[in-house]
Length: 294
Figure 1 (tube, rainbow, N blue to C red):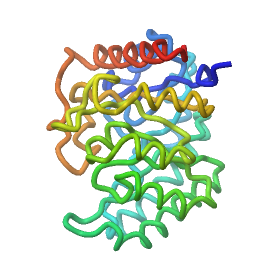
Figure 2: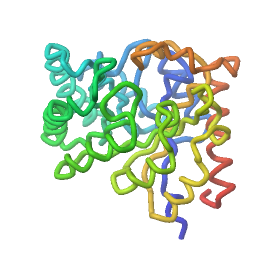
Figure 3: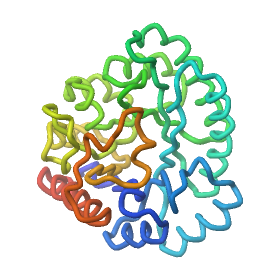
């Protein structure tokens, strides 16, 4: 039996459209059953209340028959030495955990803090671990699974530092989100990073990029080795989410996602978000068909 047939395709629906109803219509039109909620109606998920999740978000999901794969939160995307921001995010995370339960979602995405420019990330390892433990404890208390995404500019940007993070926190419920493009954009060896992190991977983001200029490109057309890595995920029994994060054109919340201006590495290759989202879905399913997964 091909194990990755159990893998569920999801996606950051705010890249398809700003308004929630159009997001849901797009996801359902593609035959998908899941979406990742990062922003809807121009607001980050971290800015919603439990009452809004209960009275607005959940009924809309039910209307379209869709489920939530994860909450794409910005937790951990603050400077490592900003204590006020950290304390604020701890409170936000507690609310997000309650929202996750309302939405029947078991995963919350987070990051491992921006490191000051021109500083050695290793010098911040202890404080990163301590703060991550607090985030993780909040999630564990709520029976929600915390996920760490590799990202440019944070402590866990390259494979070796991610491996240190996961190994050090291996006595927790933290799982790794593997993002192809983010490793490429850090000029990290994508295949080496994958091999190093495979034991920890519990979630996968579908985004591809080029080493030459760090531009994000359609899945399977960049340097992310998607086919090779998908084949190994299938061989080793991965049956989790494959969540599209296309970045194939600019969208409203793009500037807030990274410390640097993201538009520099995102081409508007499609007329609108729906077209870009659809193209990524077709590219992903074509790759899975090609390697015999679907």
